[in-house]
Amino acid sequence: MTDFTPETPVLTPIHDHAAELAKAEAGVAEMAANRNNRWYPKYHIASNGGWINDPNGLCFYKGRWHVFYQLHPYGTQWGPMHWGHVSSTDMLNWKREPIMFAPSLEQEKDGVFSGSAVIDDNGDLRFYYTGHRWANGHDNTGGDWQVQMTALPDNDELTSATKQGMIIDCPTDKVDHHYRDPKVWKTGDTWYMTFGVSSADKRGQMWLFSSKDMVRWEYERVLFQHPDPDVFMLECPDFFPIKDKDGNEKWVIGFSAMGSKPSGFMNRNVSNAGYMIGTWEPGGEFKPETEFRLWDCGHNYYAPQSFNVEGRQIVYGWMSPFVQPIPMEDDGWCGQLTLPREITLGDDGDVVTAPVAEMEGLREDTLDHGSITLDMDGEQIIADDAEAVEIEMTIDLAASTAERAGLKIHATEDGAYTYVAYDDQIGRVVVDRQAMANGDRGYRAAPLTDAELASGKLDLRVFVDRGSVEVYVNGGHQVLSSYSYASEGPRAIKLVAESGSLKVDSLKLHHMKSIGLE
Image 1 (cartoon, helix red, strand yellow):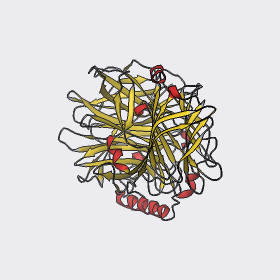
Image 2 (cartoon, rainbow, N blue to C red; image 1 turned 90 degrees about the horizontal axis):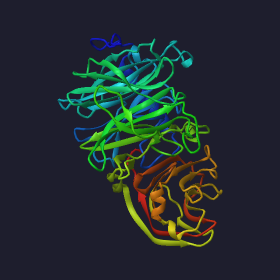
Image 3 (cartoon, rainbow, N blue to C red; image 1 turned 90 degrees about the vertical axis):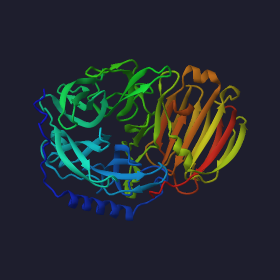
Image 4 (spheres, one colour; image 1 turned 135 degrees about the vertical axis):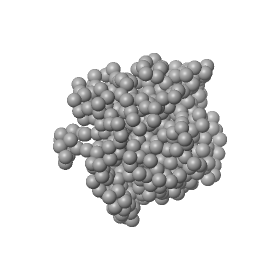
């Protein structure tokens, strides 16, 4: 099955790339000029106008962090994809860079889809991405026609790139349209690529290719097929080695599963991003040793991409607004990324994703509330108006009797709020949006292990931005990321206890500074 990998890249221009980029910049600028900032993030990455989705091309190169992202520059809903771009020297202060890619080749005429960046043996950077066309030439009713592409940057600042063309065509007789999102890495003396595929019989797979020169790629095998026959596509795949506490190498396979059905607390979102831990040897298939687990238990998390910098596995995710109503669509922008997280394996052998240490540099000041005790159905205001804060809190579960207790964030005068709480009846941390006046509602719940419950303590780090919340449970053993569209007026934070008492050992509130993208 190697007849679909050309000897040399296929380059078929149909538009002037520079002209397409200029049009896209003008489209974003027009929306940014009239943007409503009521929910626009202060310290999360977002486009200054237009729709964004997946993080792309994540890398640290020549002293700068680079985050690219899928961008529709002409509207606040999904449309023909471009690559937006921001960069930073410290992950704290970011600047906008020119849009990197716009559709200009025949193979990508309907979208420059997701992909990754990798630094080659010479220390130079290469981009790999998916070129997207509609199979019928004009809309999605006939399915997708997708191929893998490559590009090389024009300078060390990565402010522009030259497309090299198609390197892997699609064998349409073996694929049910979906065929995208390349991830490239090196093991031994061989470069490997995997991407997501929907097989001819509509099974979600990841295919494995190998290369010696990073240009000519050979098909090797199916790296992994999802065991659930309902899962028809594995979007935005990730694959990387990681060491456990005993120094043994494991491999983590990550993907965003399309088609999985809700079951209890699992798979409540439209599509669900998760991982499995197992083993892999070059040339072989991935052998899972765990079940599918969610990267993030919140309402809005999808398409994470990780990259390795000096032994640190860092990941960004997209806070995905899949379910209507999506009120920020009316504000000239739509979509943001999560905070960067570092992936490690905990002592229990499971993945931990905590905010990177650099995020502590966003703290402007700290209000230390010390220990707090609330009696039956008690309430205490922690902040009268909190637009962008981080809260560190330790709950003494053993000394608390409340059925539910925690923080009501974005609490406004109309009675709306989002509730971040520990629910003692189910032994989970929940983000509950039932009282919100804007956006879709519902709740999400992150599990605690028997050992965590038995410890008698619960550590929470809660990051509140203008329109979102990220909750890190026990150092990142679980995370919940959800949009929270606050109503008008001051946005209070209240500590509450329901049907019982609450003992908080410590509570600190940090005001967060802007990352410079507003």
